[in-house]
Length: 514
Image (cartoon, rainbow, N blue to C red; front, side, top):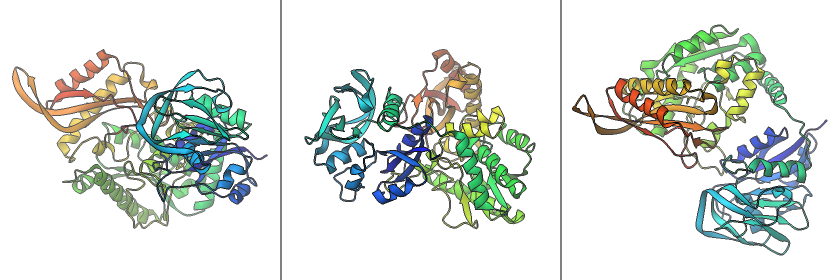
């Protein structure tokens, strides 16, 4: 039986794969395709899956730009339901002769939409809905074939539909958690408009990923980059299931791990039925980062040095392929798509050197979000302590130190991070949080310790809630917990005189500071 599928046309928006993620949460299969897919190509998709609808993603460009991505007009005449989001919303109107123009007042963040005509995608919604906006252009008016369904204070046509068909547009992002009833909107599109059946599960992904990895790697020897985090641990278990003893897991201690983390990784994975190698490269990485201040350069230096270590270990075991646990947020923030903006380089994506000795870098988890990876980890039988671990960047504490990385700064941020972790995990609301950590800023300020003047670093504490790391909200931590964290950091770390709490959502910020 062919599974029901919704194709997401990629216009370069950072939430494109989040749309696909939300669809799969509803047990409907989804894949990302190029924005310029033709009707003939969609027909070829129909041979392997049951395409039930199309979603046009957002994007960073304006429909007025000469090289802005477009779609074939025929896409709108396929008798398939279509939903345009943000840029996709504007593009449909622009193609069909409506009026799109730059907004007098841009909308970035939460807005209040008035639902004028509920139904279809907007079925069952309140008359006023809290939605997430991120746009500079607006739909000002429609042709007679279309009708407006909603508006906001700054956007006269915030939602529309084609009167004679099944084409809808939303200026806001229903895939982002800040749109309160976004899930309901997507469910309406999937099950009311597209008439999908929920017939896809995560077990399908695991089976396919193991099979694809086995076919790709065959009987070749392979090394996997293992950091001990959820992504690398999951890809290690998946690759081991696919190729068994032909896999060697290489753990590189670059010196930027949290307190006691290297020992945890070694103790955990030496018990697994895999070839395991631990490499002490602490001084090597620290030397490479000497004098490096720019965060993008840090990630690139770390990414290249990781590969050089992996190449050395690969030569020893005769491996020609490198497997790594890259997931989708890594790729999208690195700006891998044709029309995607680069937010920051990830050491395991754009941070990789142009020339490598490996035949290929294999990334079985590249289309997944963090919460999906956790589900895969559970299916593969990984221990709960790994499945539930909070995310940790590959470059580690090096990108939680603003400015140059030194041994002294590493000691400070490592101690501060341990204090944050201890206090958060003693409260009982750990499972409600996505990440919690300390950042050592490059700012110093005057303080008073022991009736004497002190001049020391400022540490920032970052605690967020999220579902998939593409969006996040700062956590409303009780003041007494923040007070204890602050008191412990300033009392137990002589070099710190001030502690601040980061109350910025993602967007506009990212979760990590660098």
